[in-house]
Image 1 (cartoon, rainbow, N blue to C red):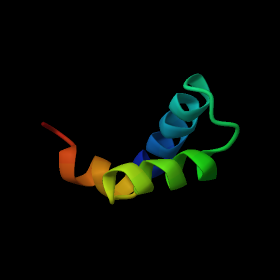
Image 2 (image 1 turned 180 degrees about the horizontal axis):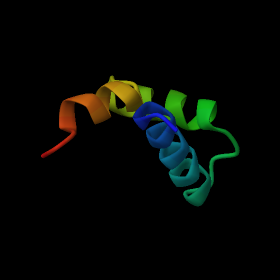
Image 3 (image 1 turned 90 degrees about the horizontal axis):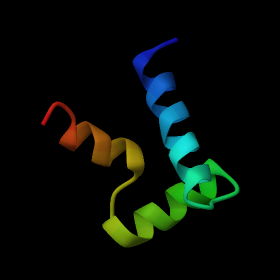
Length: 48
């Protein structure tokens, strides 16, 4: 499993844990709130 796939899986689990029915619904809401996609947010905040 690639790192990207693992991160997407982790994001999906987190999205479901907080009540979203799908990753796309979570990603849309995340983008509306932060101005970034979850992937872009992770890439800029990784390894911190």
